Image 1 (tube, rainbow, N blue to C red):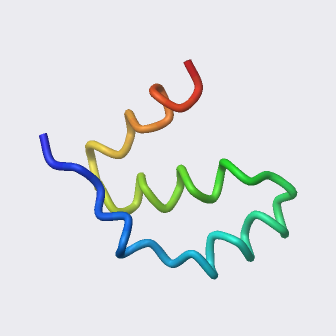
Image 2: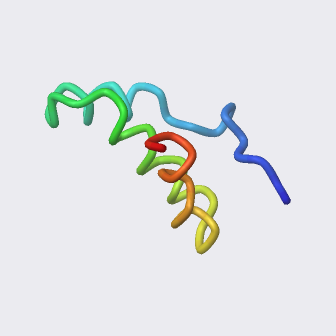
Image 3: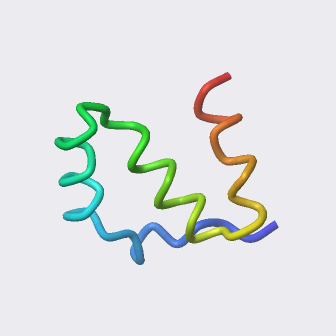
Amino acid sequence: MERADLAQLNIDKIAQQGAEMKHSLMPTLMALQKQRGEAGEFIHYGATI
């Protein structure tokens, strides 16, 4: 299984979305899901269970 590449995440965009959504975790999960494509569907399970 490949890991997400955290160096490729746009931290500024994640921070901006977090401020807009008033939620710090959702933009991070969404960015990781986008990066991982089809496998990204399952990222939230580890973060929320």
